[in-house]
Amino acid sequence: MSATYSYARVLHAVGQVLDQIGVKSIAIREEDDGLFVEGYDSEGQFQLQLRYDIASLYDLLHKSENTSSEEQGVIGDGGLLRRFLADHKQEELIGALR
Image (cartoon, rainbow, N blue to C red; front, side):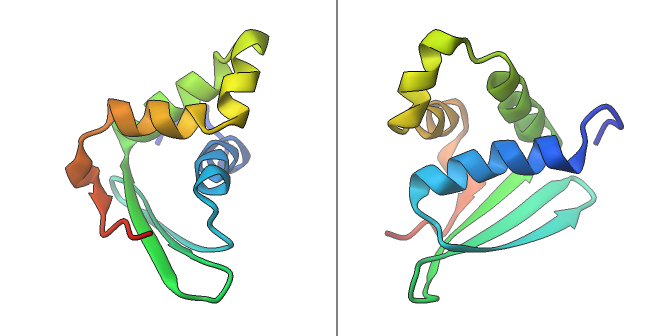
């Protein structure tokens, strides 16, 4: 990942998506080509796995940074998650359960 993106910015963008899904506990592993995220519900049960490659992390950060104040309401009701899912192919979501 480019040095221009801090862990704080990356984790904030990923965290917004996880909050909207309702994940209560996470495990994040940095890989050579991006991040591997596992989410669990409040009972500790496996909920989902997400694999963010470099390109999808860049897109997520770019959208998060360029969100206008008008879009804040849309993001608050799950808009960011809907946009992310619409922009990425289903095979990037590994075992999403709910």
